[in-house]
Length: 105
Length: 280
Image (cartoon, rainbow over all chains, first blue to last red; front, side, top):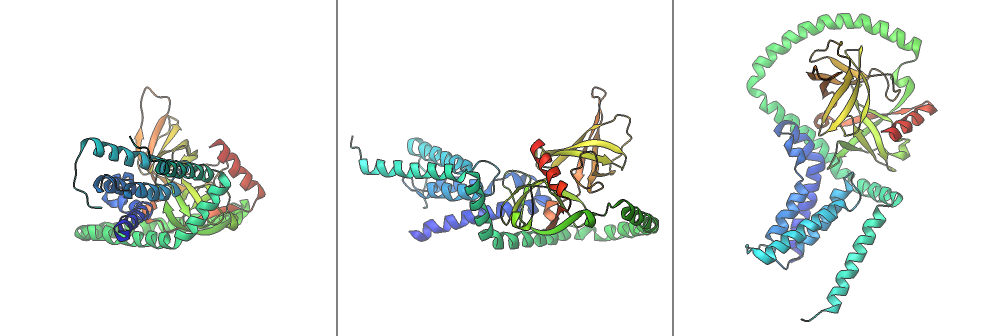
């Protein structure tokens, strides 16, 4: 249980480090668009997308990645936590009401 | 419908704590202390990842150019021939320049304490770099950040105890006066996303792609003559009073490992920096 939750969180933290250290370099020769992709937000959306409807990992992912993104952001502290929490809430709302998808976590 | 009071209370309490924490972390002193502590804790990983990324990028760039190495070798040999002639001319200019620097006290090392700083990362939503020198190292907001080749990277935007945020010249809202080809005045504006342009250039000025751009002296913000980049494209329109140019910045984030913070020895230097920061 702990392992299945810890792995995505570690993956999220790795995504933040990629965003702030690796992306500026690979964007130079693979394409500037790479720098515009928010790997961390994308990973949070993927987690929220594939977890169980009643799962809480999406919320944890929004909190952890929001915290790290706020750390390296110029916006007010809490901006990314709020944005990602809203995105997770929207995904959960839409899935609960209208969609059935296979769940992995 | 059954209402679970305990569950709602826990949810409300969690929300209250989260909102209170967010509000508390927006108090400048708490925000600075938290960010400084977090940067300090994460710096070893960040620093090594940044250095590894530079190395990996260099490897893949050279790998991608392997097919055209023969052509590049020929082209470089031609350039070496041309460069040798330029070096001979430059040596004479260098002697003259050194004499003038001594006479006019314009030496960079004379006017500034250069502090070597390691780049630790880049902000997720802007052209902002994080470096490992902060207010404890006498770094102040507004100080110039330059490369080993005397290229201007940007200026210190915010300081923490052990770290600082550097607003790159391409960051949105950044503006200062520059000289193109050593004689044409213009105003450089950062556009964000690694782009910058120079505006307010006289229509009479004759510019060409590749002209070098250096920091101007009008604002007194940066040391005059620091390399900014080269002209990438020129935009001229009959409808406009001035011409503008796009630039290729000399400072490449992808290639950078370290930078220098030019801390002014002159007590006025920090004031100039703060005036610039307030007007920025």
